[in-house]
Amino acid sequence: PVILTLEDAKQHPEYEKYSEALSGAPGIENVYQGGYDHLCFMRWLAMATVPEGGWMSDYDTFPLGIQAQEVGFALPNAGQFTSYERHVPSLLSGSVDEWKRMTIKVMGTAIRRMTSGGIHGRYSDMYALAELNGYYIYGVREGYRNGQKPRVVGYPYSSKRVIDCASLRSGVYAMHLAHHYTRQAIENDLLDVPEDRDEKDRDYFANVITKRWHMQCGDSQTLEQGRGRGDYENKEQSLRGTFSNTV
Image 1 (cartoon, rainbow, N blue to C red):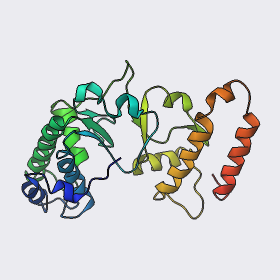
Image 2: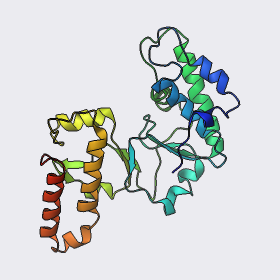
Image 3: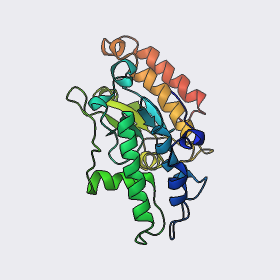
Image 4: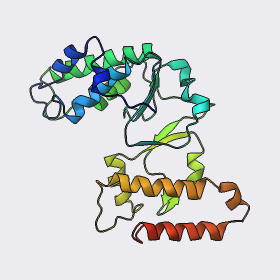
């Protein structure tokens, strides 16, 4: 993986134009120079400067079923811009021409909406992509692989402490441990939250779920044959002890 920075975005020929246009729009409180949502727009500019195009993911998106040999370099849908969580830009792919095309559309949509006076409060690249995906179809599409729809999911638990391994083998590319999914998992009693933790501690939950994924889904053949069940249970007990006996 490659981490792009604001310096990469600044290499875009229209960086100054878009950066200024997206800053300080009347009535928009969350998009300002150096702020989180402003930087989320700038990442589109950075991706549009990558010569070969490729994938972009949120920092809280973790790979699961995606295989670099299959789709890492040979982009899905022949390089057509593809969003794997509908309008949520958690995992996106496309050729450099597609990234350039969609960057202009996302920026244009955002600037038009933010300066029209019709929106007050918050706006983001997610809202812009939602407009393009839901109201104005400009080629954004969900991807398909071998007849199965690659997806980005939230916490892939079927019940507390149990990973839905079958679902993760049915075309799921990644899990997105977003704030929304974290709150939802806690409300649905899928996560144990230690007293010294809360929904903001997504790094903690990511660590736990990654270990469980390897333990429960990585050796499925052995478990299906009826061997290793005791070893799995021992590993689970060890894991729960590692994480304050509350996992």
